[in-house]
Amino acid sequence: MTENVPSDKTLDNSLALLLEGYQFIQNRCRRYESDIFQTRLLGEKVICMSGEEAAKVFYDTERFQRKGAAPKRVQKTLFGENAVQAMDGEAHKKRKLLFMSLMTPERQKSLTDLMIEEWKKSAVRWESKDKVVLFDETQEMLCRAVCQWTGVPLKEEEVAQRASDFGEMVDAFGAAGPRHWRGRQARARAEKWIREVIDNVRSGTLDAPEHTAVYKMAFHQNLDGKPMDTQMAAIELINVLRPIVAIATYITFSALALHDNPEYRKKLQSDDENMNQWFVQEVRRFYPFGPFLGARVRQDFTWKQCLFHKGQLVLLDIYGTNHDPRLWDEPDKFRPERFKDWQGSPFDFIPQGGGDHEKGHRCAGEWVTIEIMKASVDFLAKQLDYTVPSQDLSFSLVRMPTLPKNRFVMSNVRQRSDSTLNQKGH
Image 1 (cartoon, rainbow, N blue to C red):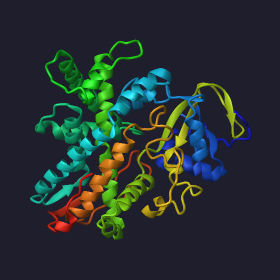
Image 2: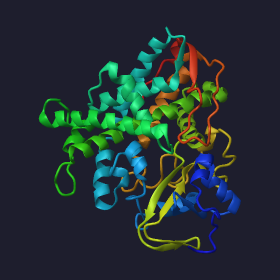
Image 3: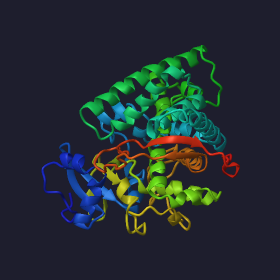
Image 4: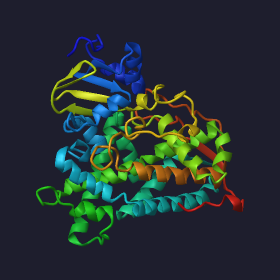
């Protein structure tokens, strides 16, 4: 390691990471006045980086690879073992193109339209309820929509369990103890379910149109021309289902943003499509989602006077980069208008990772995330009247992932009757 690069003096910072959460990397970058520092996590020497220039280096595929970066405990809960997130080279490109083929503008619109229908149906049900827990409801809405969109059969009596399982997989990230084990149990249930679905598609028992994700996963061929085994096909199909259900977190934070910044409700009701886009992007920038991403050094190189050794684990600060005062004026203020003149790059705004969508590791579902969020914000601002009762809406930057403590409770939900505020198509 290079002596000129700041280094934590403690024997191991694993506990500090759990105690500081999203701000672990940011805190040290400020302390050392450096975009890069060295530390030790779980007994392993690790380099942590933050900022736009760090992101550019991190997404250089000549310097970094994803294989071996995600700990097994994360693979066994969040991603699934040996999935697309852990692949590199031509194998990764081919698998990534499979995911990108699902995200054409037409297919994105189809999923967004299904979600709008879920909003309309839910709004009717909510009128007869004393209270609604928005996070739980949106998880179930998204689960219904994405299963219909992918061609995965889902019985209504299964919705709550399946949606909860996808949520538990995400919640297990950065967790130890009960949360981690709940995530593993949830993944085991989901994989068993989806393996049966894949088998049924392959045997012809389940009819699946060729454009659906379930069909494409069932019959996708690897570089060797052979189809994925049933387990891997199930894992990758879950990697379509789970991230869509995880948009519930962003929708919940969107509702919190509307509550904390009520002036934007009127601005969103003005039918200015730009404001909807800016609002959604600011939610993705401002509120915590992914704390950091990991990769391993492909070959020795030097950057910022630091020698990166082959095989070494490197963490890129996602949350800190999205709050970097060099990139964002008053980064700790919620201000959607900042995106009015934002030119941006694939490396300064990275809520779901950075780099290139098709060739790199940037999230294939980022575009559809934005569209579903826009439709949801539109519905919340224009279609619903509701009361936000007294509750704890704070969220912890220590807990990873985080969420408003009471998951955003609404009461007295009523559909708006004003015809000028009718939902518009997307």
